[in-house]
Structures are given as structure tokens and as C-alpha cells.
Image 1: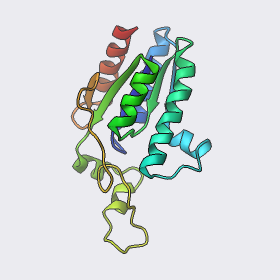
Image 2: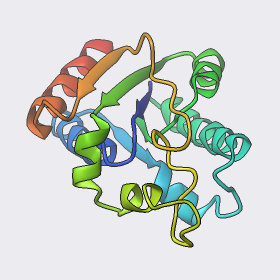
Image 3: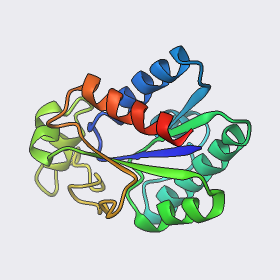
Image 4: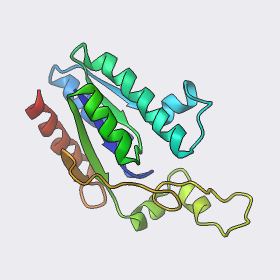
Amino acid sequence: MIVLICGLSGAGKTTLAQKVKEKLETHGKSAEIIDGDEYRKMLFKELSYSLQDRMENIRRLGFIASKFSRHGIITIISAINPYHEIREELSLKYGNVKTVSIDCSVEILIKRDTKGLYARALLPDGDPQKLHNLTGINDRFDIPQHPDLYINSGTQTITESTDILFDFLIGQC
């Protein structure tokens, strides 16, 4: 199974992926996380944040995930994954793909802003530090319309979110 954890920057995708992986493994299930930020830094440095490169990034993550999944490993892709088209492409290509939408209001994300991205995206035009392509602020994010699972990290604790995702995944195995 391939699990696409999608959501805006700072919504808690990586934290949730790590917590649910730990819980799965304590229950005898093999799991692997493919973190979009990590893979981009280590393997896909040449990709920009254009629409085409973002889609190519997800396409590559999906390919890697398919290799793990083929061996019975629950593979969690933790990435913003903003575009409906590429999520659909992965679902059609690899079969057992589950989309998990991690929702959190932009207001909460701006307050969290662990990476300083929202502050940079909200800088005035002309500021040399302005970030021009932050998903959800000045770049599009297609909210999953019919995700397999919806979690609101703005209203649910990490423990609640982990339990919800874990129960969902166990039910799919």
C-alpha cells in the first residue's frame, strides 16, 4: 500500500508519518516513509518548484514507493503533493494508493511557521527575501475532494491523528 499524506507546509505530515510508522512497527507491520523534503534535498536537487518539477518530484516519489509497496511494506509519502492530477496519476498507475488529506487552517500554519516560509511568502512584493511559490499562499493547492481519510491537525492532537491514521491503515491491510 502507498499512502499519500498531503497537506500544506507545517500541517504535520512528517510528524504524523513518523508516529504512525512507529506504531505500525510495534504492531508487526513493515513501514517506510518517503519524505518529500528529504528526497528533494538528497536525490532531486535539480528540481525547482515549478508545476512541472513539483509533479515530477511526486512522480519519482511514487515510483520509489511502488518498489517498497511491492514487498508488502506500507509506504508513506509525506509531501505537500498539491496537484490533483499527479495524485490521480499515482492512484491509477500503482493501484493500492490511499490519499490522506491533512488539513490545517492557514492562520494556524502562519502561527506555527516552523520553517519561516509563511513569513517569507507574506513579505511585500519587491523584498529580496520574498518567497513567491509557497503552496497555499501564492501557489495553488488542490484540496483532495474525496480523500480516503481526512485529518484536521489544527483541531486534533498528534496522538488523535496518529490513532486515526493507524486504525485506517490496519483496516486496509
